[in-house]
Image (cartoon, rainbow, N blue to C red; front, side, top):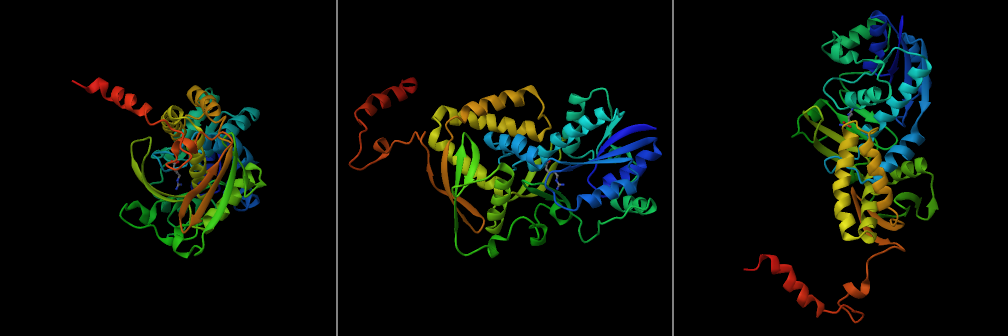
Length: 389
Ligand code: ARG
């Protein structure tokens, strides 16, 4: 039998894939990536074996996800189509990379994933597979198998003795990790329908959030968040803490229609309290310390970087080149940002940095003013010169 390494989640699709592949002559090694989705991993491991996997690897990838992917995307200011902080998109190349590592160690013949042919995740997995293990076969059963509906899959799972926990009552497709959560399908497929309150798990409804504002201070060192209210945190616990504080205050709900790489528009709901707080805080600190030209240029680079992540191009030369650029751009983003969290709103109310470019003596209209207004006359003259007749 040939050997295949499968990215396994324990959900209906990947559980059906194991017996389905066996039937096609493949022996499955399941790889479970713990990216902070929660749940009982021992149970998931057992389920993989019960479904017919010959071996299971369960990897704790949370630290790597946050330190080597999420913090880079934060420094880059990467928000896809201006709104999505790419939590799900960032986890895919990471899982795929580890899958390839295991496949090489196990001398496997193939790599498999449980993504559909309509989404972005297939591209993120397969691009990484192709770049890191071009010699291996890639199998995407969900794109080709005979099941037309979830119900048919459920019947198959039952026949194969696999327990199924998908019900008609919970029709959503959800992706969760340590950074954020994405929810789609069900009633959300109608873009006019307001998301029902029960889809949310990381955030409190702003309506039910505390009536008093929560103030927090975040300290950054060269674009990396280091402290909350003066207390140092390691990256994983910093994100956890901000998700907690932000979630309580209803911060980070996003309802968007986005353009998938495959050309389909989709409606997705995101919850990402920590990401919302961090992006808001860091971009504000940037506005204090960066010169105008860097700020303008960085916005363009941010958009490109977000597209690279969304489109599965994490392990590419341009992404690496842009990291060097962002590192250079962040040499001055050291300082503290003070935010006010209140019923879904995350507002910066103060910022300070030893690298501040803000000069009160130039900005002020008060007594301390040192700006020589006479200089402006010539400036105005020359500014309009190219257009004068
Ligand atoms: N649209 C997001 C992306 O492409 C999330 C995909 C997964 N969403 C989900 N609800 N299962 O990155």
